[in-house]
Image (cartoon, rainbow, N blue to C red):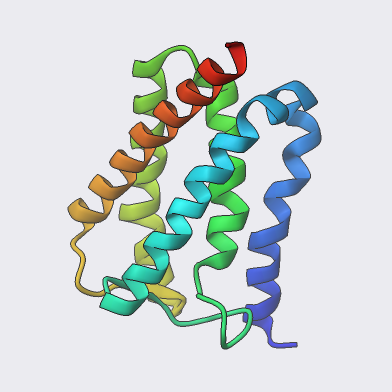
Length: 152
């Protein structure tokens, strides 16, 4: 197996090892909304691939999008952790998301480009950041909606 595939598998699996530390109640409370935003991110990825907004050159399988390990690894697990520490405090939630997302967009994406994993093509960094901002707001709203329906 090629080295990059091992890295992609690691990127997909390693974040899930932190779940026991997250706690069963936290997982149950936030998983549905995190999965929902993950599916939205997957749809966004298909559109981005088609329109060449950003591109991930390395893939687990030729028929899979290159950012699948990111979406189903750190993105979903990271959403759960951010909720654990910030839910109920919208300002803290947004500041945390903006910080984490900015680190990804302005530092990690540069590193991905350098190592040949992925890069922005027709999308500027500030536009990519704005997409993350919108997803953070949608995720919070989705969680509020789910809670409202569960409590009624």
